[in-house]
Amino acid sequence: MQVRVLVRLKPGVLDPQGRAVHHALEGMGFEGVADVRVGRLLELDLADGTDEAIIRQMCEKLLANTVIERFTIEGVN
Amino acid sequence: MAFRAAVITFPGSNCDRDMATGLEAVSGQPAIRVWHGDADLPSGLDLIALPGGFSYGDYLRSGAMAATSPVMRAVIAAAERGVPVLGVCNGFQVLTEARLLPGALLRNAGQRFVCRTVALTVENASSPFTAGYAAGETIRIPVAHHDGNYYADAETLDMLEGEGRVAFRYAESCNGSARDIAGVLSANGRVLGMMPHPERAIEPAAHASLGGADGRRLFESVLASFATA
Image (cartoon, rainbow over all chains, first blue to last red; front, top):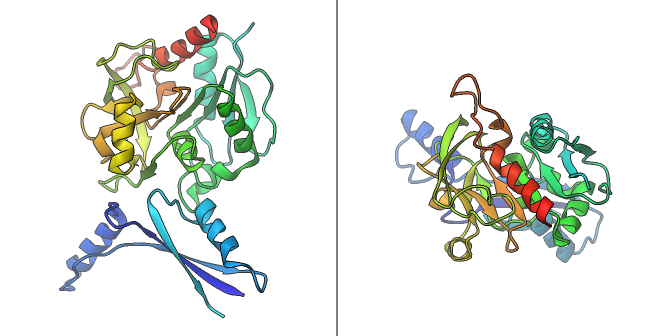
């Protein structure tokens, strides 16, 4: 089974990378960009039937640092 | 009894030799070098040092992969027994990822790698690492990092300050760190993580830009606490 984990900085945590991308877009002439946040997408190929609780443990123990990041788990098929 | 210090090397560590050299210069004893894949630490350690560098290429997050390495399980167990643990730069990042210290190190607010000698204020002068300094003293220690922007939620920051667990603060803003925090201590004061590099400031240099000697007292403090233990 394919699972996607989307890891994002929590709201309120400064994202210098997102800010740099934001400034670059404005510098290129794109208008109306209010904010940009950069996150991380992980695609996991797991044994069929892997329990969501196990995937959550993977996220909490390694894939995300829950001090600064939040994550969402999305089943692809 | 001779002072026994171990320096851990992860793939991508690059300050491990400096750390060992600094420890040896101060203690007169050879530092024991330990590889990340070792599941056991040498017995009877008086200090474990996690050096700077870019462990595992900083993949995923700085320090995240190193925090899961076999040797870190032994380091966490040793810290729980009260063995002093010092993490410098990437070593600090590893300690936060391993949850031995609260908070996290984010990308510098200015987005740039910062490499210069900075002024620090000693906030806590009573830990095994900082007893050789005076509280409120200003010292100069080099920094060299991209991810040194200390972050913790307001509640955690208040707790750290209330319990005297901020060891060092940048005398002027360096990387966007919350409350200019440069180094933090564990609740029992026996784990210290700091972004500046005391091991690069061990001997008076011919030129002031080459580090200076303000880092030496950190290692002397550990040695003194060992001697009186």
